[in-house]
Length: 224
Image (cartoon, rainbow, N blue to C red):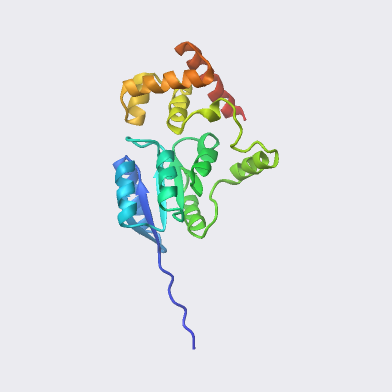
């Protein structure tokens, strides 16, 4: 007579630079029946080291990390561990980052404000080989691919690197150089370099022109 072997819990690792968020994830995972907490990391370099030492079943990566963009980390880990399922998390609306996250190699995108049920469903879906984005975002992605536009389009915004795009989004939110530096845990000099590169890619000469364009772009995203 056959007996059902209990399925091993899904081991989850977290990469987030905010201690409270990491602890919140730990509590959430430890209280879920079929999930198990593997480890946590506060930045990209620590995450790479820990993945090498102990590869989890699913890795949850915050997009905004102090040493480099979470999307860049996802790209690196995709090369190092092609079979490792990853979910990108962020405080930003998924319309801004979901397609970039999937293009980088993530299998899902979840906002930090999502209910625990949505987070749990996303972890299970990604662990079983699926893609975890909202129904609305799924439709947007399908429309993009069916029309041939997808993320391969070469508009000026898509030409920005992941970190440059983060800076651009924050400019669109009306944040100044110091506030952007604080939000991304980088120096004001680094922010200025990113702004210079963004202006070059967008064909702009003046800082004021960039701010105006970024704010108008952000307003357009809200109405789409």
